[in-house]
Length: 182
Image 1 (cartoon, rainbow, N blue to C red):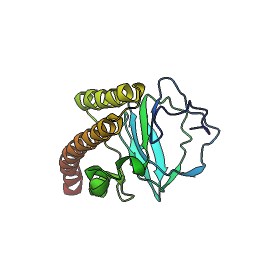
Image 2 (image 1 turned 90 degrees about the horizontal axis):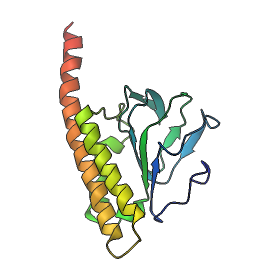
Image 3 (image 1 turned 45 degrees about the vertical axis):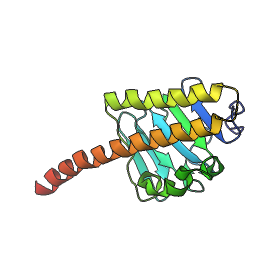
């Protein structure tokens, strides 16, 4: 966060960046980064490609890419405006929760996934609401329930993402089958 001159996170294990208030510059375009966090980005209107491992996430009218800790990411050189959020959370946040045991079952954190989750307008409203709920919780003073609530909200975000991913691959499979048929 310091590298991008963002304010100190409100929680020691979670940071939420609202791109409406913080703009990402191009001075790091083309640079590779390893981040030690999970990252879930909600890019409402970003169009372009982001290099992830040996492949690229391809966006059309925004999307929801997922990054696991210690994976190679290359900063985009697209001069696009970002709108949305980036959620970063340390593996220690979920370590003692069921989510920590099953997070690898969410396949969209794998390098092998070559496309971001594309969202319908209705799905964007759901995802925006989930990010706003996380933002609200991070705005509260930390208490004995903070971590439980944050982990629950992240798990809910992942479950909705799983639902939307399954919808995406059902509908995109039909598109690919049509292309192969032609």
